Length: 204
Image 1 (tube, helix red, strand yellow):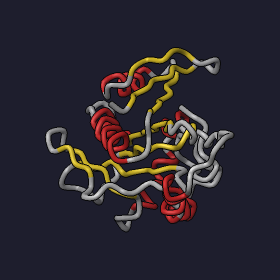
Image 2: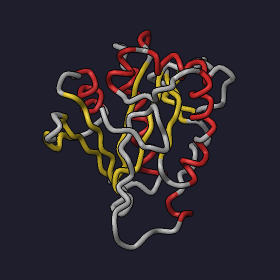
Image 3: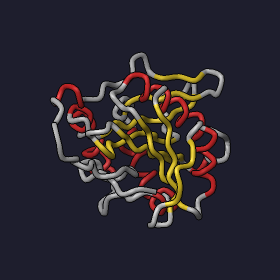
């Protein structure tokens, strides 16, 4: 879906643009984690940080090995459990630098079980535009979990983080991802030269 942040291999995010101009202080760029964890009781899903469950590295490595996840997202060349554990260990640094924030999608009552991921990377630090990425494991696809997770995450990010606009990029041969963006209230912004469709959602 998108080029990954060099600091955050394995998720579908853009490299921060490093826009020229006045730089903001590091404290204004840092991302906090949601507390309490985000839950949509009606849709039966919640969002929590990576590393909160012992089996998270195993689950992430399995997701990276999923052909559909690997086809739609750029995963690292080394995608074993050790690489997944190292990526999870770098989560706090990525947030503190305002580069990215990534959350596990889980089903209500099973916070230890990873069914997907949703997160953002900063696409334009000066204008405070973030790009959202998401995936779900095979068993969770087709049940509306991705839509619920993206909608929940997006509402939180626009309300609580210093982000003014969220973007999503979907491939033309991936209509399921486009439906997720549309049902999560993103609006179409047009097609990109690379052959993807761009969506946006603004803070109100």
